[in-house]
Length: 157
Image 1 (cartoon, rainbow, N blue to C red):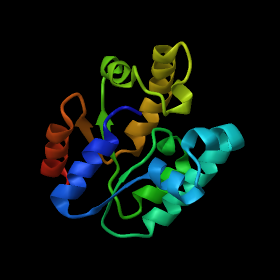
Image 2 (image 1 turned 180 degrees about the vertical axis):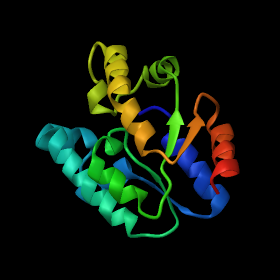
Image 3 (image 1 turned 30 degrees about the vertical axis):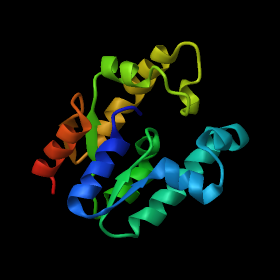
Image 4 (image 1 turned 120 degrees about the vertical axis):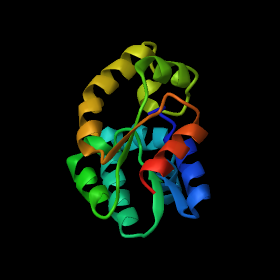
């Protein structure tokens, strides 16, 4: 969350001629609901079920650049699904940069709290080991999206 997956993914798609899919936007289109509405109606577990279904659906397609939501890789089944025939790239961004990038966010349900930076810290501590174990490739995401996309291209594609 906040590492620049969508911006970087769009740049990679443009540079490679591949289709870009942001799983959160895909879920919103598929369900006709915003992520916040899904969380409100079905809770986080209901959202994660939809997310896993979307991972399965997208994994059957070729040549996609997928920006998976921040919690996607916290579900082992999603990691298995996405690793089949794909590379998972971990865009590593410092806690300080995440807080700065997310300070005005109004879309992410998990951040609509008063202690936003504490939530970011807790999520990062919980998710970082999962991201690292899922990733095929690590890149430093503390730069512009163009620079990070270029670094990914030089390593992966």
